[in-house]
Amino acid sequence: MAIEQLQAVLGWCTVINLGLLMWWGIMFMLAHDWVYQMHCRWFRLTEERFDALHYGGIACYKLLIITFNVVPYLALRIVF
Image 1 (cartoon, rainbow, N blue to C red):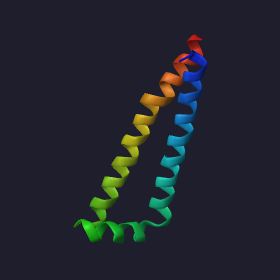
Image 2 (image 1 turned 30 degrees about the vertical axis):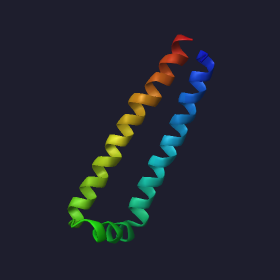
Image 3 (image 1 turned 90 degrees about the vertical axis):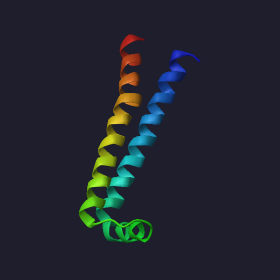
């Protein structure tokens, strides 16, 4: 795979992953009660625990996007 193709793949992966992250955050903010009720059908969670799990998940996902998509993309752009 050529460097240009790898840059394009990493760029699009970043865009798609950031879109998913934004969708998750928007759903968490705007449809919080609905999502909480849906999860409570399967798991016994307090609302505080539910919020903490989602906040932690969003933070981990954001760090993974930065680590595995943004940083390699920027490194390739700088070097080539």
